[in-house]
Image 1 (tube, rainbow, N blue to C red):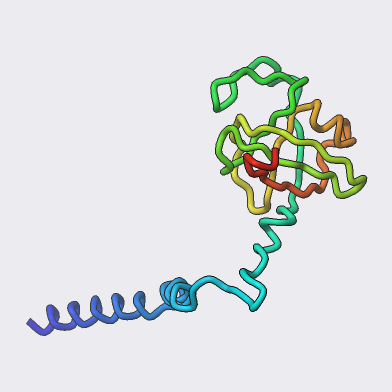
Image 2: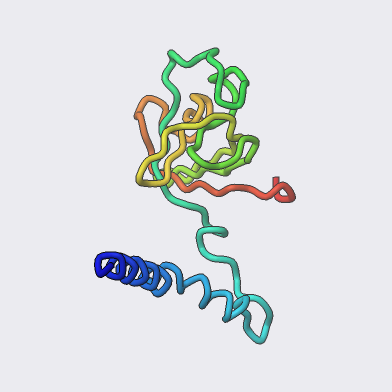
Length: 150
């Protein structure tokens, strides 16, 4: 009987600890505060939404020419397409090479493996337009585009 009470107490402590952890309290605080605003109106969107995400871009190897992508389309190295681990298929993304400020707009039509840092895998034509074809990778800024702005 004593072991049952001890086990019940331990389970109760674990549940209480989970409910009181900072992970569970942060969303509640944000909801209580409501949307951020100033006297002039709402606060500008976060920097990530307006300035994009910096990461590493690479491009498809020649051996993938003509293979089916995750979306079902065949990979064409002459089209402006890309693979991303999480963006939905059909999303248009502006990619800017940080080394030379060249930019290109690509459409996500494939998946690549998830990595620790933001990452995109571009078609060979997109890499060529960004000026890093033959170099392997480049540091880029990725900006997902709204339907209205494309």
